[in-house]
Image 1: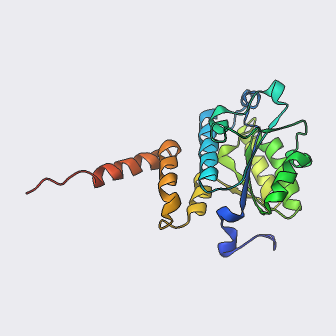
Image 2: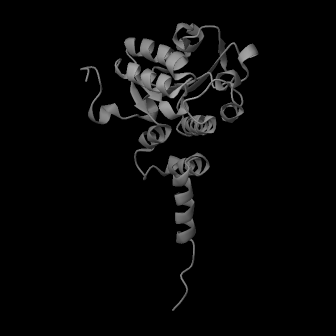
Image 3: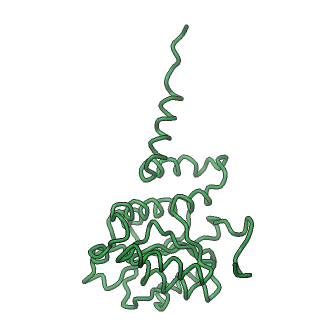
Length: 217
């Protein structure tokens, strides 16, 4: 492990220190996506976007040659209806100052990235940003690649650069951190109901049981 890797509580995500960059979740990218079920990626990316909005985490949306590659996925754009994605020609998002200037202005160093493809449009900016002093996390279930091997090799490559792989539910759980944080607790529960799979189903079942009167003996 590198001496630069954070340890203890410092290694956990905090909403006040986080900034999210969502990269190229566009129709063209899905045409050669073979590492994951596309719906699973859409679900994870939408869940992450909704949680970022809930926790007031600045979120940058970006596309590549949108006029040919297609608009950002509706499931993400609907979370930020008034935000126009930054459309790039650079394959490496981190070489586009229209993106990096926005990130820099936030003053935040916990950089959370997700996008398509893992081995190209995610790995490039993640590696560059890590080299520039950002504490980079890649949300692997909101990313996808042209093959399982390509995704796995990209994650292994990024880990060699002290980048942390994580899934979207782990991200939002670290943002919440404490069940006593009621100002975000209910909103997070609603996001898990919509995007958390069996965790959302279990939560609804628990609410049903808690709200079912016990027959008098």
